[in-house]
Picture 1 (cartoon, rainbow, N blue to C red):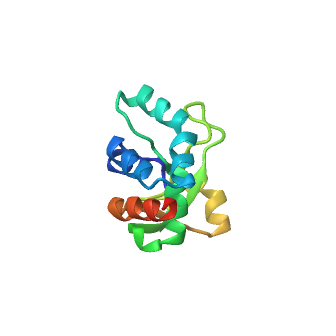
Picture 2 (picture 1 turned 60 degrees about the horizontal axis):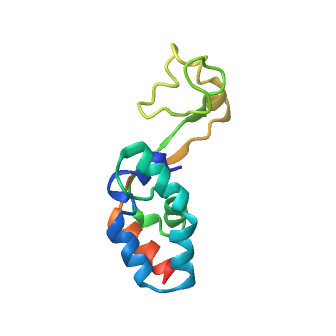
Length: 137
């Protein structure tokens, strides 16, 4: 699993990256930039900065190149569906407190399945951008 935060910050495709992608002069490169114009506008509206956050291509890059994950861990994961505070939020038991008797009721579904998820915490940003350029070349 990768979190949305991995597509932010340094991983954002900035103006310089867009110029490099367009310089490839391939149909895929042009399509990638053109098809993400809405994402670029949304990112600007949210942050006031130019760029494109690409969480789905990052997920695919990590699947094809697992070495791009610089740190990860196995954790219980639940999707919140019943809280008044949030809905659809992914909750990761990063601290390992799900099995604590005080938390077993809340984490009972994940504990019953006894299946942990590999969560990527840190991305090799330079490697991600190189993989993107290679895919678009």
